Amino acid sequence: MLQKVSDFIQAHQLCQPGSKILAAVSGGIDSVVLCEVLHQLKYDFAIAHCNFGLRAEDAEADQLFVKKLAKKYEVPFFTENFNTRAFAEQEKLSIQMAARTLRYTWFEQVRQQEGYDYIATAHHSNDTTETILLHLTKGTGIAGLHGIPAKNGHIIRPMLSVTKDDIYELVTTQKLIWREDSSNETTKYQRNKIRHEVIPVLKEINPSLEETMLHTAERVSHAEAIVDAYIENLREQSIKEAENAVYISLLPLRNATGLPVVLHELLRPFNFSYTVVLELVAALEGISGKEFLSPTHTLVKDRDQLVLTPRDLNSFGSILIQEGDTEAEAGNLYFTIKYVAADAYKLNTKPHVAALDAEQLKFPLKLRAWQEGDWFVPLGMNGKKKISDFLIDKKVPANLKPQTLVLVSDQSVAWVVGQRLDNRYKVTDKTQQVVEITLHRR
Image 1: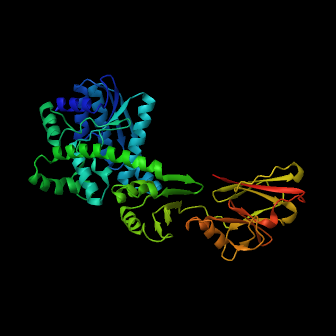
Image 2: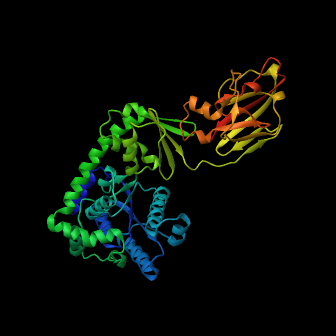
């Protein structure tokens, strides 16, 4: 087993002979073996133990056991007590996820503060098998099939090539003792159900299941790297961000291999499920305007592009701007306001800047979302135009229309914010004072 671990460390370049390693040790059989392996391979290591406060006296006994283990190997010992239940409730996490978050956050703090190069965990090939089966059961993309990575940043898993049988053999030959966690036996946890009820059946079909899964995970990992490079190339060609939206051009994707998978990967940061992506792909040749939702974003197909906007934009109602105000906030937008004598003003015609004739304005001005029935006289025109028609002419995507604001002076729209000034409020050669309002996006 020691040779197997040593070969695995070298093959995956997990660490160097002189690396300082912080071993994550619970006191269970796997982590006890990790300590023995690091000791026999002559690595410079320390032991870190978490007491999650979930098992009363057993947790205290585990903590004491691991402290004695560190004394046995004559290595530094670090430990921390957590109120896991309180943290889980505060962060709205499951107990298991809360413990995981606390564990890895603290390990990294110790690693940095104490000058260790890596954090080693005791995951082995059985864990890889369980992880892949769990992901398959719940539904997964390619990322869920590579199992547990041997190296992830500063976290290394040197025992991924060994099986649970290898571990039992080592504790027998070395006469090691460990602490047994009774929760490992209950099948109320999903992973334990797979471990105790599913895997034994699969091993009847393939006695070398763990080795097979490990090799499969490695091949999938290499395939994932190829897919990632392909996706990244398409991402660079198709995605751009502007203002409050993300735009995905469909033109580079027309001939993409495996379009549903490609789109799912591109949309993964926006939390779209694969089921919704399949509905989207089916609608790509249809008319524009169809809307798709994720828990966090709205997506609209708009001609040859997809437009994504966040669903949780701040709602601000309306904002009043009093004469003399120099700034205003509206949700995630910020406005600066300047009052300048006309003869000292250089006209700024950018759409995010409104240069208004102060004499034509009636304060307080009001910033609000546009409403059905609103109209204005677009700069350069003499006739009225409904804002709804203006937005259609401007080809503003459906999910960006509700975000369009107007600046109102005495019931009249003076500026479609970020789009077009009203002709009645423009600066002319008769203007004496200019009110310049500039839109900023946070």
